[in-house]
Amino acid sequence: MSNYSIGIDIGGTNTDLGLVREDGTVVGRERLATQEFTIVDKYLDAMVAAIRQLMTDYHVEHIQGIGIGAPNSNFYEGCIEAGTANLPIKERIPLKEMMEKRFNVPVVVDNDANASAYGELVYGGARGMRHSITITLGTGIGSGIVVDGKLVHGHTGNAGELGHSIIVPNGRPCSCGRSGCIETYASARGICQNYVEAAEEMGAPLSDEQRKSLTCQQVGMAAAQGDPIACKAYDTTAYYLGMALANAVNFSAPQAIFLMGGPTRAGEALMRPLRRYFNENLLFLYKDKVSLELSKLNDNNAAILGAAALCYLQS
Amino acid sequence: MSNYSIGIDIGGTNTDLGLVREDGTVVGRERLATQEFTIVDKYLDAMVAAIRQLMTDYHVEHIQGIGIGAPNSNFYEGCIEAGTANLPIKERIPLKEMMEKRFNVPVVVDNDANASAYGELVYGGARGMRHSITITLGTGIGSGIVVDGKLVHGHTGNAGELGHSIIVPNGRPCSCGRSGCIETYASARGICQNYVEAAEEMGAPLSDEQRKSLTCQQVGMAAAQGDPIACKAYDTTAYYLGMALANAVNFSAPQAIFLMGGPTRAGEALMRPLRRYFNENLLFLYKDKVSLELSKLNDNNAAILGAAALCYLQS
Image (tube, rainbow over all chains, first blue to last red; front, side, top):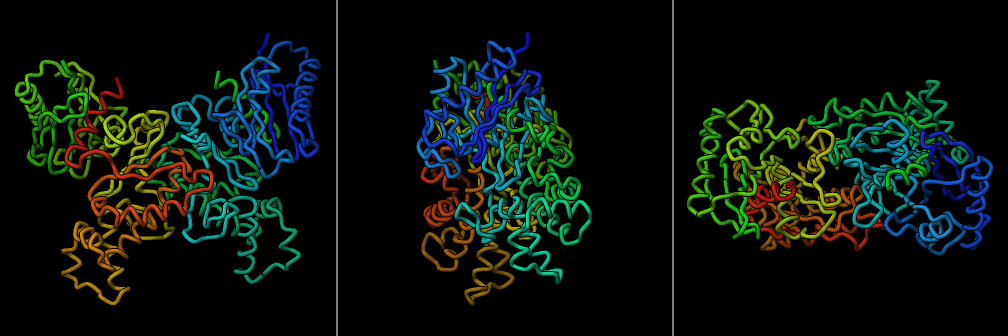
């Protein structure tokens, strides 16, 4: 008989639940529309029903635990903090306490980027590594840092916000209210901005309409096909991200850094310049000792696997 | 009967040895001139003799362990790496192995900045904290990072090189061969450079001779007395250091950051602008949750205490 756990990935649009076998197979999935729920109890009831449905469908009588990845969550308190921007429920959601009551198994809540790092450690490329960093590129930039086999949570419970490391003093304005965060140069939005600026520099400025409809996916596809403006945009992305990742190495000297998320689909158009700038900016002590890799997890399952992994590492 | 340990601080000029009581009192000290030793065995013999002398002088029959803080040392291998710039001995020095044979007690070797962080944790202001960072300002900038009560050594054994985090892309050239490291703006040398530039900007450029003889101590004393050029130099120092320390918080969310070393003797001339820039650059998640403090260790004893602390934490 195999062991199973539940991974839940809470996002602003969807809440994805998966039944995960201990070998990292996502056996079954359920999905809730996050925006439909404005009352905590109703939201919880729906998650409980979805979990029971999965267990019934796949004839699983017992689960090892439940891991939940969610934005703005507090690992130590096992909750989503009040006022989380993307959720319709604005009050504090004490997920750990409520779910443990219902299922009587360990429940671990952590932020989505930390969950991804757990997933990489338990099921992906970081297996067996004592020290690694996982970076999720998307609307923002998230990170999860593993030191001595454990995720770094810090004094506050929300350590690991490398996306908000300032890489350019007085640089681009960031959604966090400050300036020059790496997120403003290497997130999906940052990459679009790099494209807009590259187009202007190269004498082919975009119209307002073109700017508005531009997506990071378009830039990535164009770069993969060798479009010079898109390649320049990715080169700028890689320049700043390579420097920021080299800085991160100074902190914890990891064996590897893993990258995941939409913008990494550009593949070598991102990774080729990124490896170059990363190695150029790496302190001599760490030369040839830190590898830079794409996540080994399947994009479709990464968030659920990461969440499911949480309960294995904590038990 | 009290417990005692030995702390050894290896520097390019002196090798300082101290007999330390477990309450953090440095009971006795010995000093060797590092430059006199070009042969590993002779150097080791002299250290052993100094330790035996201390034990005899203070009637101590048994020591708990020996901690050694040294530049370019490898914690995992317990050695000083071959080719360390400031030492006359150029071969690898396997201190742990050699000292354990002589004394049959645990010996821990770590770099000097890590030793300082240990010292702050065991005997100083970080006592009882699970997460802290200690920054040593001097000729360079060193750092020791404590996560979950343990020092971060990373995959390579030499994690925690925050002094070489790039804070200004394409900034000042650094001794490490790269550009824009925080060390080039906030080390003793960096502060002198800030002074030279401030003097020029303020219409009072220094002569070549004045530049050559300028010391960080002079700048610090002038700043403490309100000299506008020196204050401007410290403001620049604080601007970049505050930003770099706010970036470090993103990593491990410590409860406090401690500063030590020569440039901190400027006191409030450094700390006042540093607190301001640090708080301005701190991500909203960490506002009012991380304190910035001067080391609580006595400057004269800090290095020996840090080294002595190493053996307590490891045992």
